Amino acid sequence: MIFLGDYIQGGDKPCEVLDWLMQHQQRNIVFLRGNTDQMILQAYRRSDADSVLWIPREKRRDLAAVYHDFLATMPFSYEATVGNMRFFFCHAGVNSARSLDEQLPRDLLFYNEEIIKSTYKGEAVLVVGHTQICKLIPRRYTPLVRGKVIMMDTSAKRTEGKLSCMDVLTGKVWQSN
Image (cartoon, rainbow, N blue to C red):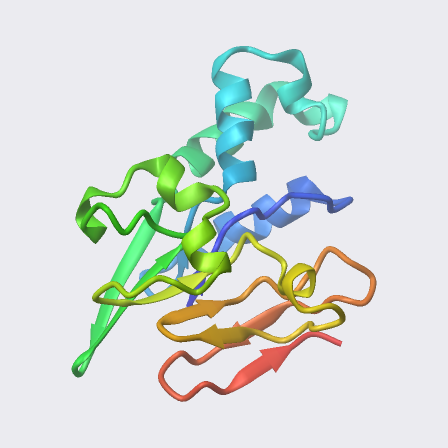
């Protein structure tokens, strides 16, 4: 399983989410870093007092460093080849002017016009989150496949949205209620 980032954006139980992620670190599960995760890390490194306000006051001293260390270990991307299919997983997209192994963190973490307009023609199938599909196609809360891009952000943080999982080899999708 490969998770695409932004684990504690907009939820009301950020510590519980990070605790669950840390308890489920295994060889067959990959937690990628999202732009929100990166912003939390950067704020923490600057000693920004607001960076830990999401941690309950009684846990701040003990947990801020633990959560920081965990977020800092998350990779920006993950590659997998199955048979003759090559997949590249990241939070938001890539810059086609660079090879996949030369991508910069900002390329992988933030809004990308190539992904939105489906002009990506690279060598691997991209699997991304970040951009809510319902903002591209109103009222759509299922993954979107466009050419060599699989968009997975099905608006889990919205009331009508879903949390989605896809077997990228078969296209089978599972969603929350």
